[in-house]
Each structure stands twice: as structure tokens, then as C-alpha cells.
Length: 456
Image (cartoon, rainbow, N blue to C red):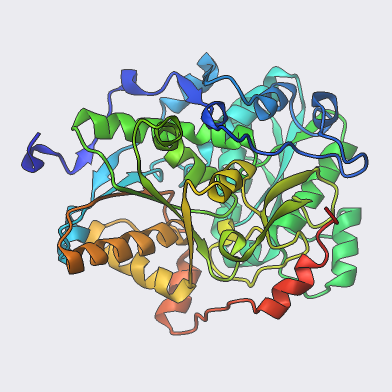
């Protein structure tokens, strides 16, 4: 099909919405390492995991072989409220850059939560309700996950307790209020409400918090509260499974017009967005059917992939979770209070960590002032104010498009626009006022946290 016949926005019909999630682990020759019980140092059993997570989610977490897992009707019905989401050709950004590259972005901000997080939130809330639970607990960084989960819990009439990283709680009060509007309780973390929170505050009284801290508090409350379980918005295998709807839709939309991407780019904090976007493309790559250049983009202030260790580590600061083999900066690592709160996590998804370790994808770290410069250019060109997290992918997409300008290559670039930044205006204000700074941890600082990783 000729280029002029490709629309600005590629929409799918309702019947093209995926009916099943794709389990990328089924095509991985080397499976992600299992979660380990820190006490016994043996792989976690389903019975052990079910003390923290919902039963059916535990099954999904441990399933390394089933290629496609059907989406239950109740979840599919909810998906149809806001899915399929559009795949957009960034014609105006291309013109602004003067590049021969063709740039597409999968836009996940067209729901009230403002991001892709709702894809897994509605699934996890559904399984909690099906199990007959009273409520669920969670953590949130920038607030997209907490917002999505509060929406899902309101839909299924579940109680929702959210521990929000303190710096984001203070920087993003409006997203906090959206959560409360949907009925969630929102607590800045670390807090005095839990034993772990009090311990962290005693050791680090002025801490701005981290996702690792908030996870510890949420898990503690779930384990100690009758009829509650803990849910997580990233990192876990089950979450990447649910987010595969993003990549499956992207693949269908591209195939519809005979488009084959050369480069696929996603921001990476814990891995939910990136893992979901690349899923079917990585599947083709693993099966030897096609090849793509896949790039994970992380903040230079929290460089798990590019400077972390690939080892077993705790998923939380309080060390109450299982050990996961992943690229990590150490569970005690407290990132600088940058404005991409959803990327301020010390570790990376075990699935993505294994794929990165095996050479199937690349990773780059970028500084936040350059990220906001790219975000501003995108906003002025494409008319959408992007989330700071998404803007990491925008930054590298622009970099790759400019390389094409230098070489004259007409490469096709696809990136994930995970959500909108309309609740992140404090960050944009800091950038516009020249008050935003870039922080990159030194090798000496990282070494201190590496030394606290459990002995292998």
C-alpha cells in the first residue's frame, strides 16, 4: 500500500481486539529464573505465593508454557470501553525533525487513568473479586497504576489501599485526588502506618521514598489484613502477560497496512509497558520469523539495565518479598526525586532481564532535562502532552529519527506513548523555569547498594 494511503491514526475494529493474552515465556528458549523464597532459597511454590497474590494470578505468574491465555468475558467487556487504542503516524513530528524516518506511536492515554496501566489493573481486580476477596493493596509511583487500580476496584466494588511514593504524593496531588475520587485510600510512603515504614523512616528520616519502600508497606498490610491480597502494576510475569494487548493491537494495525517496523522503543522502569509493546514482535524474533531492533529507555538517575547487576535481589526495600533474578541497583537504592515517578524502581522485570541478558534487546539511559526537551517538541508537534515516563521513549525515537536524517535511511520507528502528562505540570514547570537538574549516581554510590544485595 502506498504511503499516502496510510491514515494519520490507524484504528482497529472492535472484533480486532485480542481475545487472548500472549505469554512471551512460551517462546523463550531460556526461561526467566523462578522467584526464590529468601528463607529456604528454593523456588517459590504456588501455595507460598497465594498468601500474597490472588490464586489465578499465581497460576499466570508460574505458567512458562501456555502461548495464549484467553481473556475472561468480564475483562474483555471492560477493555471494550477504551480499547482498541489508536496507532498514530507522527507526520507532524517527522516534518519538525526533517527526517526520512517513519514514526508511529501506540497511544495508551485514552482512558481516565491516563495510561496503559488499566490493562492489568482491571484483570487483577477481576481475579480478586472472583476469589471473593474484600480488597487489595498496592504501591504507586507517579500515580498512573494507583489511578488505574482505583478505577478497577470501583468497578468491581473492592476496597483499594494505595501506598504512593512520598515525592510523587507531594509532586502530583491531582492524580492522588483522582484515586480518592474512585474510593481508594492513598498514603504517602514510607509512612508510620506499617512496621516497615517506621523502620525505614527511622533509618532515613528525610527520605523521599521509592517504589521499593511502597511495595514493602503494601505487602505488609495485605498479609496482615483478612480478605486482602497484594497486586503489582509492573515487573511480574502476570503483568507483562496482561499488557501484551498493547503489542498485539500494534502488530495487527501495522500488518493491516503492510508496515514492518525496524526499531521498537519503550520506556522501562519495571517493564510493564515495554514488555507489553514488544511481546508479539519479540515472539517473532525468538521463533526466528523476523528481526527487529528493540530499545529499552530508562532514566540515567535509576539505570537498572545499563549499570545494574544481573542477580537475585529483593523486589522491595523492606525485604519481605521473594527474591527475583533481575537487573537491579539493590533493593535499598533510593533514586533521586526525578519527575518520571513510574521509572523510579531499582529492578527490572525478570522476563525483560533475561531477554536483555541474552542479547535480544538493547538499553539506553537518558537524562531528564533532555527527556523534557523531547516531550516539549512532541507536544508542540503532535498536540498531546506526554507523560514524563513516555517521554523517555520519545527522546530516543527522536534520536533515532535524526540518525536517519544524517544517513538518509527511511527506517520505520514504533514507540509506546504510555500515557498523558496533564497531572505532571509541576515537572513541566520546573523544566520551563530552568529549575530541573540531572542527577546520575556515581559508581561509588552504586557500589554501596550493590554490597547490600543478598549473597548469591
